[in-house]
Image (cartoon, rainbow, N blue to C red; front, top):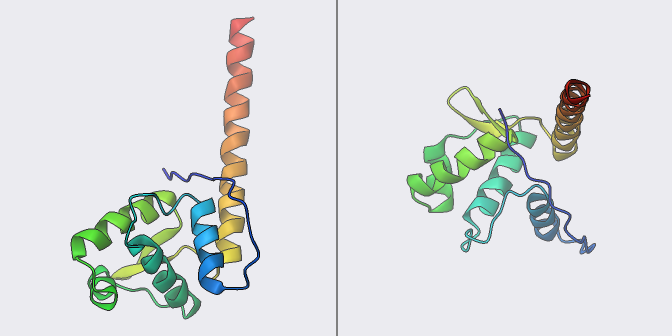
Length: 130
């Protein structure tokens, strides 16, 4: 089971990679108001970079590289894992695909499949109610 929240966020073309990554993460509901120190955002950037190189990174390495507690890393990793955007690989974590456009395509495919199933069950319910 994966849980992802899609939020329509106004996009302002800034040409700045960090702003674009922030917009993408916000649109996917990854960074909340509680992420005051941008720790989840910073983790996301590291995971994107490592995924481009096809390298998983451990929670300990994330904590060390970002100067965050392991508890903070594990908290944010849980959210990223629950969303299905990040997966466990070997002894670390990596984006589910090697690039962001493939991740979004996967999310789109998964969402469409879920909506088809929901629609089919809704039809069955409608038929039972008639």
